[in-house]
Length: 102
Image (cartoon, rainbow, N blue to C red; front, side, top):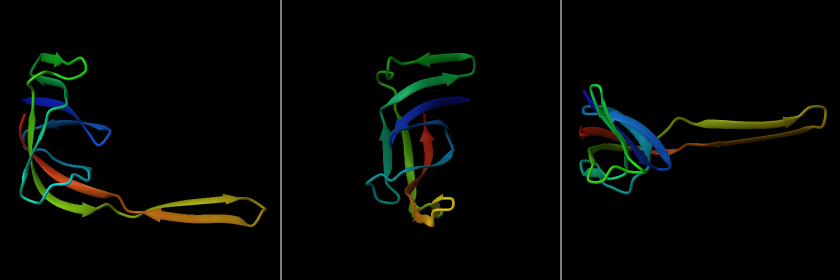
């Protein structure tokens, strides 16, 4: 089974054809296709191809399933016996992708 490690949004993801992944928000509409040219590693079976830093000519194609927001994350800070506490929360904007080809 062929797989690849791609870089997007400052993170790296191991993907194979048919995988569904959530990545940092991409500025594309739902239903469009996205091509990632920053492929770090590709492999099939026992053979592995490692780029320095990227593999020339290698691409990964994905279809955008939806744009959505992640669950809420709450950060709570406090200092004991000082009466100090601060609550802050946020929801990340994400894009769900289905990998079409590696």
